[in-house]
Length: 217
Image (cartoon, rainbow, N blue to C red; front, side, top):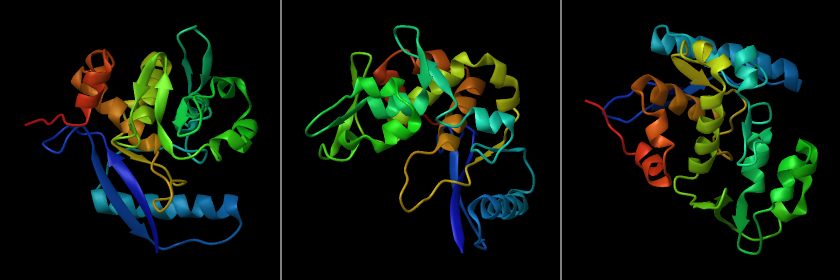
C-alpha cells in the first residue's frame, strides 16, 4: 500500500489546518505513467473518504495553478527586490554546523543547487538565516512555510483559484523521507487568508511562531 498526507485548510480547535493520511493501492511502472495513475488512485480514495470537496494537487502533476505553486516555480522577492524560486531561497538560507548560509546558491540553476557538495558535507542542519533573521528548525517545516506564505501573498493572480481549494495534496511527497510539503504550506496560506491573519502572522518572527499554536472555537 502507498501512503500520503493531505491537508484541509480549515481553522478549528485543532489549528489552522487539518493534516490527514490516506492509504491506497500502490502503482508501479514507468515514473511519469505510474505517478499519473498513483495520483488518480489517491484522489479517488480521498474523494470517497471526504465525501466531496475541491482538491488542488500541488506538484508537477497538478493543474496549472498546482504547478505554479511548486517550489521551483513559485518565486519570492528578497529584500533587494529580486525574485528567486522558493526552493532556491530555502537551500541558500541553510546554516550547518560547519558552514552556511550559502547565499550564492539562490541565483543558481536547480541542478547546480541540488548537486552542491556544501549542502551535504557541512554537518547537521542547525537552522536558517534569511534577511538578517535566524529561523529554527522547530517545526522542521517552519522556514519553508514562511517563504511560501510570503511568496503566495504577493501572487494575487493565484488567490482566486487557491481559495477554491478545500483539500490540498502532493503525490510526490514521500512520508518516510520528507518533511517539507508545498501542499501543507499552501493550506496554511489559504486558512490565514480566510481568517484575515496574513499581515499579522508575517509581521514578526514571534507572530509567525504563534501561527502553529492558534486554535479556533
